[in-house]
Length: 450
Picture 1 (tube, one colour):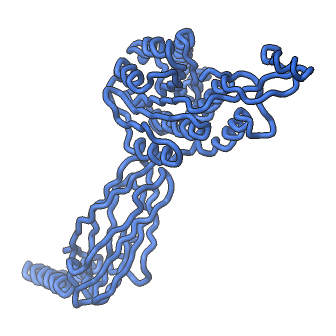
Picture 2 (cartoon, one colour):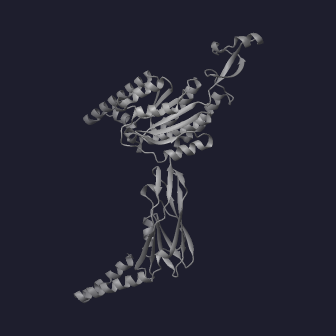
Picture 3 (cartoon, one colour):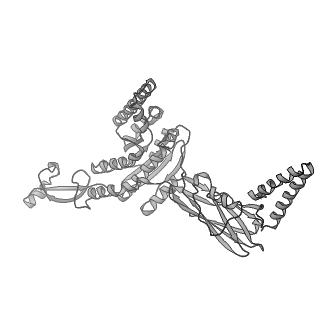
């Protein structure tokens, strides 16, 4: 049983009576009146268990995008129900201002619904059905499990209410936001240039023969086709197009370093954005994309999927992937790559280039993989280090700046050692990592290194 402010007011009205007749019997008598009034009011209220409940919600939504949870209430009882309904979700679901049916709320429902966006005022007559909707704006990736739906029915006096909770199992999968999608159009335009489908063509490196054309000043003389030139009595050059149907394997490091928060988000989230943009670009380029999320075991894998099914598969697998507080087993990463990639491929390691990661096997992994594959190491830079390095206000800021500079030099040294082992290194701020990695992919493709 739930009490409203009217029950409190009824109890407070007894204060003048007690002051007029200051006796224990007066207090007990008035308390008995309040209890009886609330009990009778609650008993007269409609039964909340006489309401059939069904909840509907889309199967998935992208992080930060709104979605509605719709609860359908069907009253099968004999009394009119006046009260409120709570459509409970975890805090990360981001319930906002509700949108429900018209009608006044119960005595406690109106204020409760205003303070709590997952509460809705309802009036249901016998045999009637209503829908109430809760707007959700998720703030975290993963699977959200809907909690119970609670129905509170107020009595005619509005003193007390009967309450019941119903289990309505519901799951909403929150997919990655894919904010880097805004960079896809410009990269696709550059890809079309490389592939010869645009008015401007990039002539040069590649291994797949495209066509012959007349020589113009500035062309590489190594591209001249002497036999064709002799037949035509004119100098012609070969043109090439980037290779297609190549293998691209993206490895997301989900070890403890991926849990570091940058711009109030785990470092892993920026890596996921970069992986999604690169996958979309490689798919349009005709390459075959595989993804592996790994620390000491496989957390997610997408393989053997192409075409329009690729991006939904990636988003679905990466939705529930989170940082694990363990050291990454880099020898296991090598085993996974070699088991899947027998031919030359582009292997993208999305990890951190902190010295501690290099000491735990990253350098050896890159050296072993670069002998057979083209390796790219993508890492998220922390903007706070640059801010700390500029501090000179007092002694504390000077020491912080020195520590930040040292950290930057150590990361730069790791990047140099990675390049010496044959890897390309891409280090950028969270918002810049995805486009920078896409640009690196296009540069490698234009240079014929895939």
